[in-house]
Structures are given as structure tokens and as C-alpha cells.
Length: 117
Image (cartoon, rainbow, N blue to C red; front, side):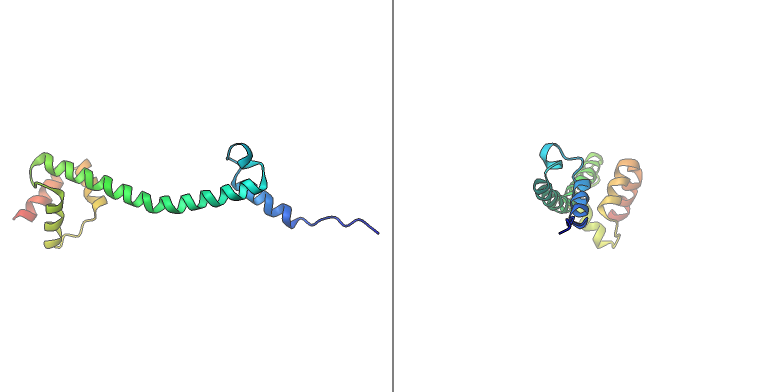
């Protein structure tokens, strides 16, 4: 009987997994079973941290807005500013407000003065 050589499909699958884990350290980039476990773990962490990143940035924006507002004593708190923004139907999101607070404080003061009037 002639010798039958194995196909390339399994090898192609393993090399694809190895390319994903090529930057991992130690056995996590060399052993196939460990690579698959680490790949699953990495993808789970990536998905979890995408949601976490949104929360972290929102907290950062709120902190920046609050610091600038309290510094000028226009409002006593961030929550009152946001409440009055919604009452006046000025729909500026927190990211834009934080950028205005950092780069152009006078513009934020103008917005807050318009709300007070």
C-alpha cells in the first residue's frame, strides 16, 4: 500500500491560530492547545473591556466638566448644568462639553450664562 500523507487543512488552521498568538509569551505562543485557550481568553477580555472603556471615558468627561464648572463657580455642580442643558434643549454630549471645557473655557462659560438667562 502506498503511504497517504495528511492534508494541509489542520496545519492551516493551526498556523492561523499561531499567527494570532505570535506576540504571546512562552508556551502561550508555541503549544496549540494553550494557544487556543489564550485566544479565547483574549477575545473575551477584549469584548469585556470595550464596554468598560466606554464607562471609563464617560467618567473622565464628567470629571473634567465638573472641575471646570466648579472652578468658575458658574454652577455648584455638574448635575445642575446637565439638567439645565436638557431643559433648554441644548443637546451637547459629554464628550463635546469636556473638549470645550479643556480647550475653550470661555465658550463653556458663555453656554452656561445662556442657560442661566
